[in-house]
Image (cartoon, rainbow, N blue to C red):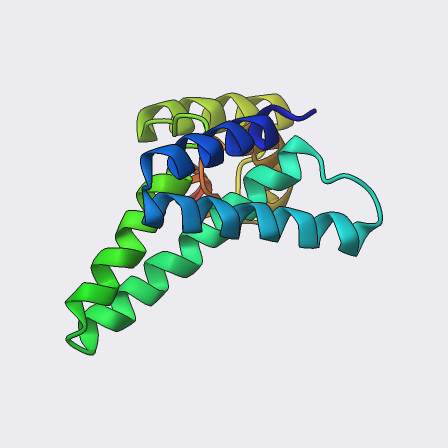
Length: 149
């Protein structure tokens, strides 16, 4: 599975040719993170794990952008947001809230979940099914909404 890896390699070459420094440095950073993950596990990181890694990188940059904005460093906050846009280009399209709720409703009916005590069971199934297409926070929000009633 080298879909994202191949895309990163091709985009890195294109960014070099076009002299897009921010895009190039962001892609290099992503590739370095993937390489570190490969070395850490001793084998090539799966596409699913790469998606998780990309989401983690986006989350870190969102937090950093907020902190920079709070510290009145709008230039740094803008750079973090630009990096987020570049990284998001390698993620599959995110699901709409209604789609997440529909998937959650289907799993709740399938498992027979009825209370918040069953949330872990529902979340376990949903996070596997929706990996890369919805964040855990959004999935959790939908499940809480449906089980909380």
